[in-house]
Length: 166
Image 1 (cartoon, helix red, strand yellow):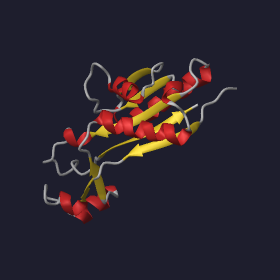
Image 2 (cartoon, rainbow, N blue to C red):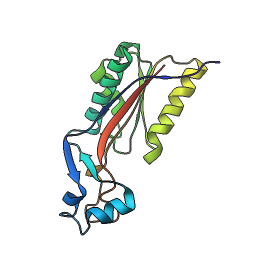
Image 3 (cartoon, rainbow, N blue to C red):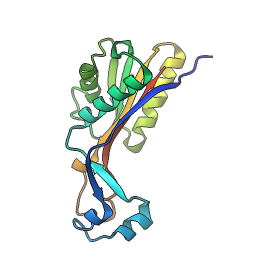
Image 4 (tube, rainbow, N blue to C red):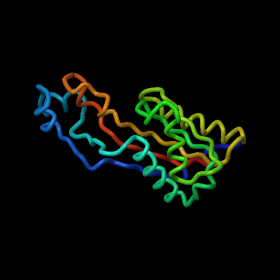
């Protein structure tokens, strides 16, 4: 029976860090209020695009796996915040990496996007239609948040994580 395994992983975490105390300067809240409801103490916000964060995470995942981008058959970006609808952001990642033979598409299913993307890539490997996939989740939700909503503005940060599946 064929199976897929993670052979490399990488991430990109933006340098801008905001604590709960920082959030209390934006909206009527406190560290205690946020932490008691969410367990969150801090979050990161990006100064670069969803695609660039994803590309950096993918490049790191390829390095960890010891895989050349030209060996990748498929790139799936799981994201709710792609660069634009057309062309897809996965194609930007493909071009930046130089993954010439890879198929590339975005998968948007909110919080479950990355998990569905891993499942799709795993099934394609198990079926024998591909050998190596790059799956990345990247979000820049800070651009889409309503910073006046006390109940939700503190929940989301920005960043990217990628895996190589073989």
